[in-house]
Image (cartoon, rainbow, N blue to C red; front, top):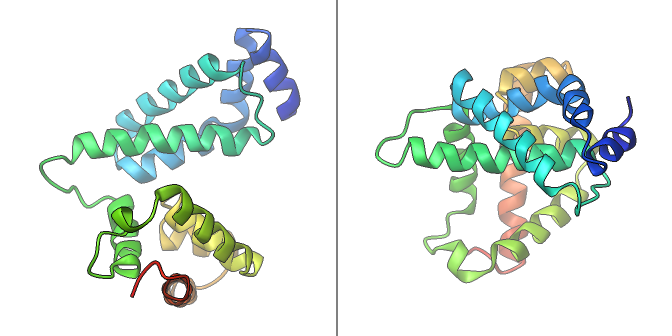
Length: 186
């Protein structure tokens, strides 16, 4: 079943829409949640919460890209759960490692969030990503949005893990230069 048909089912409040969504994207959504949380039971719960959110938001929302829409929901729910789970102590998940990598790139000695709105920073990062070749962009998004491990990215792109790590490092450096030129970091 294609995405438009699934959206149509959800739009008409048919529970078959949720079943089809789970069949088509369930494994992907679970992987995203598990990468962030490091816990299968928590990930399953977050994915179920995301299905409920889809049910509650379609309609009125009518997403053009169903997978991106649902992944964003799963990611947001999972990040909220991760923050709750790690409020007192970090657990060292792949999500933590990916955040540490990006944090070092964005650290200017100031609080970036107070200097610019998150929405504007997001637009600038999107602009930066649009300038990258497809393979590098996919690697960056898989690592820092979906929290995939370097080995998962290497397998998916059929490149050695060391090459993926190096490319991600260079991309973070380019991002840092880009954001400095844009006046976001020093």
